[in-house]
Image (cartoon, rainbow, N blue to C red; front, top):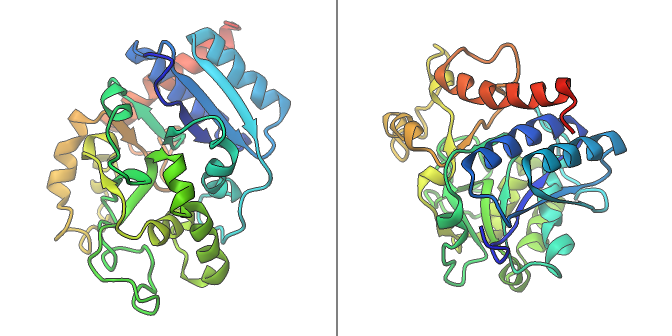
Length: 291
């Protein structure tokens, strides 16, 4: 990749250094990462964590920059996330003076194909380009923004997943995307279920560019096999059969939700095997001292 390509940005705390290392392993395996910078935004990674990431970056020939910011925006935390989930809202202030455009990736993703077509996608004035959330595809169908009616949000408006976002940082500033998201968190903490993602969807309204689903394909097949898996609310807008058929063609595979493929209780499946292959490479490098 040319150095002119936008950087990839990830936001993590110490608990997600290992998954980020696995993401880096997948990115390097594509073989199209020359000249691409990875920027890690954090609010206080330990020296050990920063050294670990730097050693993996050197081993994989990845250009890595760590960028510390102030503590993340305040918001409710529940489920499997920590305060680090709100670090995404610091991206504008942290990086706007360095980059016009960035690609944000959650650390629980794998890159499985060349990212250049995504990085070169025209945003056509939009501040953010993203994929419609497969489990919360529209407002009112899923757990996102449960108080949508009281908030005067329109039922049926598309709702995006914030785990993969192509961001135009000057447009974000012009449209006050991150500021409006912070205001929503401060004013309506009781209406937040999916953390900064809910806030970003309110702030962006319907002014976001839709990306092809291959750029944020949820790893659903291991979970959908469970008898208690529920997709009924999203089914009319995002059929489960369609989503499962997307998985073999995923360019970015996203292990969203509480079930994570690096945990022992994650269902045995082809997708877990894909993840474990990269995880084993990371673990081997660490055990062999390949720094």
